[in-house]
Length: 208
Image (cartoon, rainbow, N blue to C red; front, side, top):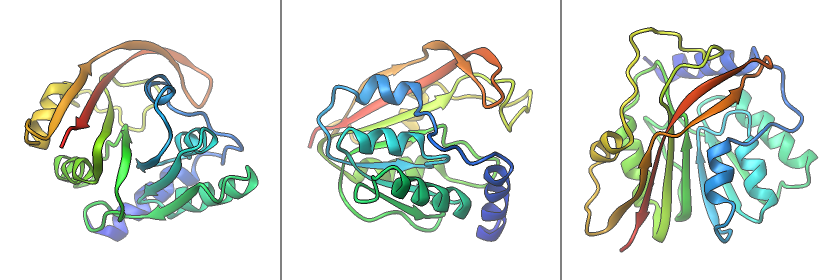
């Protein structure tokens, strides 16, 4: 699928949802990064921008990227309205073709799933190489299908965290898997419905 088709698809997804004035951050992000000292963070697939806002409020310098120009424009406006424009740089990237520049203390990829063609392992491999020594790559994937998900394919398969780690193909002499598990939680969807869901959580730290 072409870049234009990807932009059209994800612009449609975001445009169909009302713009949130203060979008919620992802639960696993707040659990895992709350106690880390702030630095430079890359948010891959920033979506509505809840993670970027949460991180910026805690002192992180955020580079937030999405293929959707609607998502990027909304986050840029939110950063201004919340007084965080100096801490959030929202950029549009099709990760099949371009990747943000810089070195980071953390890279977050929350629910970076797409029905379009994307070599996700290659994207995460590049993300790991964008880490500074000591930095962490946090990958949180769906481990189950929520009732409100855009993808209701009954045959969809969710790779386990260690399978994802293996697919990234990182040298164990320079990267260490710190966490790979599948916790469950009760989640609330955009329409207020609740459901028990499974997250696949992977944390990889760059050691050299």
